[in-house]
Image (cartoon, rainbow, N blue to C red; front, side):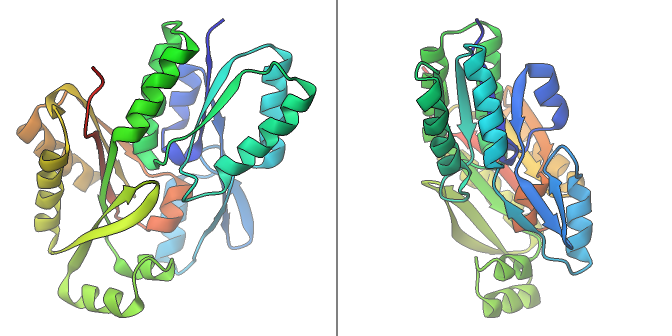
Length: 286
């Protein structure tokens, strides 16, 4: 029986991906002006960005424990083996809740063979791992083989991104309000990455063109054999810049594929509109 792949919506893959690749979607939740929505399923990311532009501060919450219980129990009853490729435990409680619910389900179904992987990744960094796992599952690869690939990619995935508006990072406590104010005056753009699952600012660059060029330089410095990789780009209602970055990556590295996706509602609620991210491996599977 084919190994079942599960992923939460923080991986920023479109709804069509789940439907076309037999991947189970576990949506995080987004709260805007007192209304709760399921990421991917019942809200479009543009609604989040428009609400932010209009002064709202959306809130997010993890995948419902009841949904975890429902999905895991059904899999156990059907004797399905699975891998849940989870959002970084450093950025959400979703992973730890999933582990807790799995323990409860296994009390009734002790032979249930589901492995939950804390990728320490986010957005399309997590999404590329899901994409590759789904390909292997479709080829009827053994669970151990898929898990090795998932763990390798999770351990070697680079996340580089920049945001349009420092004010929004300030609201989330990622930078100080004074830094955000000064950055806005001087057109300073931060470059951030994810280290061991945590969001870490690494540089400040003045001007959009310079910050995009710096993302390409950092990809060159950190990536391995980028011409033989899928490089991911995710954007927060900023497709024009995403296409500009794609052209830069293709000119510089001629990658096997450049995959562009929209940053979903759950991630976008924390980054704000305009964010641009790139994802690649610093070591490729042998």
